[in-house]
Length: 210
Image 1 (tube, rainbow, N blue to C red):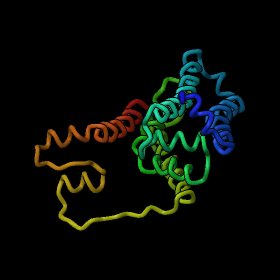
Image 2: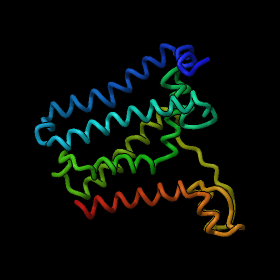
Image 3: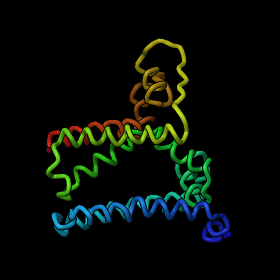
Image 4: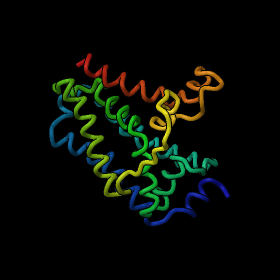
């Protein structure tokens, strides 16, 4: 069975409904709000191209995740969550999809902060510190939303001494230990480290750049 055949056979009305709501909320409504506030009049051609590139990229990321699932990435992963909610729909799949974002707040910081530093002129009149506040306001509202979707967070806190590795593994969710050396340990967790450092760099850049 081809990828297209698999996709069509898996499609359910719930997936069509969720996909429609997602496209309207992330592509249609933002542009309507921009038109209402006459933001497009303050943007030059470059800024408009960047704006639509961001919105389209947002949609392409979902399409890419669906493709990765059809290509064999069917484990407990973001691609799997994405495929199931956009193709099959359902409350459980929606909870699983939202849970991924709830566990990856640094990715949320990167996304919002990155939008603020793009040369679109829309945010030029906003104070730099207020932009940083908006990043955390967005996260706070998202966590409140998550509370009513998947419930309050439950933490499993193992008892142990406070060491560098224990902190990284238990709090930042790194994997491994330092027995093979800190260089190998940090390299093994390079994706998480890059994400954390990039988050703080973008916030610092917003403050400095204004």
